[in-house]
Length: 314
Image (cartoon, rainbow, N blue to C red):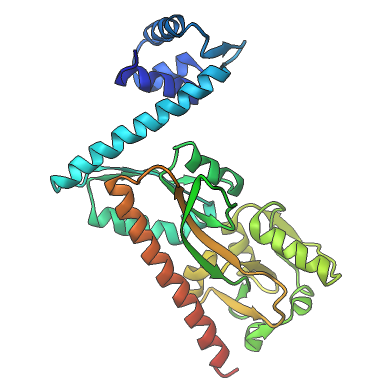
């Protein structure tokens, strides 16, 4: 009934919501894809797509079938990768999902190192909003994901969990840097640049400001971690960030970390997740192990930086 080509056709049409766009991406004729879909719908005795004015939408039957198709394609790719691994070729593809901040920071370094070790591998990094990350893994669109404070789901397996503190981040010559530590109320006296509401760090900051009855009035709000770092590089602006998001700039002495004297702001849990039921393929397993080792090392280095800063003379 279904063969490899048809699986790819259906998957691409479901992703694009259009036969024409899917045909363009697959470099085949639209009529060929349409003919295959109509034939399959006739064979199954039920429509797989709802034909709307501007797009195609999966029916309930289509949703069931597409989940099976994506798992079948994933399993096929996994077996192919395992066979390549047995031959020592190590070709294949791995798709990690993560946040934009992690993609620009720790994950970027892991990707670069992995490609140097395994030049035959293709990596597709999906930088997503936090809420979309678990669904990407559940849907089989990503092999694994790394993010903060991920929800508990019996269909997901946590491969790594590390506690990472939130710190105040500011220019290296900011007046607070000489203090090494500062209270949240003291930091709030300076103009704040903060992540948008809904981002993990911002939600934690909002909660602690409410607990302390402090007014939260940032001068800039953005979902761009890069913009936040650039803006607070000019004193007296400050922000609250996960230090992993600014460790490169800290190393270049462009930004400084100031620990919080009061411990109301919760730590973030940095986590790596995979599907609970689907075994990783050979290449994805290699990438997972390298990512785990790298994150453990980087978080340990952050704690070492905190200890060194705390012991350094003012």
